[in-house]
Length: 83
Image (cartoon, rainbow, N blue to C red; front, side):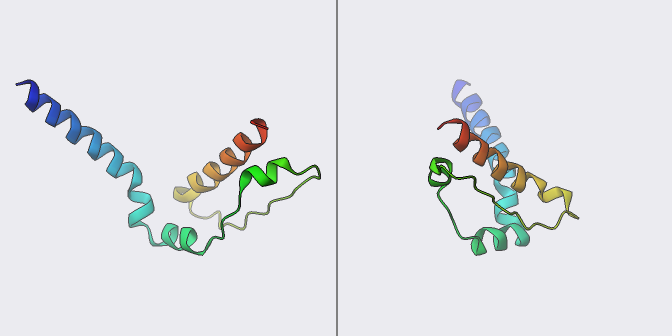
């Protein structure tokens, strides 16, 4: 019985993770953004002594994708406050 509950718990966790990551694998726009975006090291930006501006060119007509910008801004903020 315990093994069956463990399997059920694992399936529930797997289902949750799969649905959370689906936006990165099932959405063509998100795949293009990820593929075409040049990476940069946030820790290097945070170490700069001069002010830095990052411009985000993003179509705001799709609220379902706003989480991407939110994640980016959160990562930048975390990099800056950890310095």
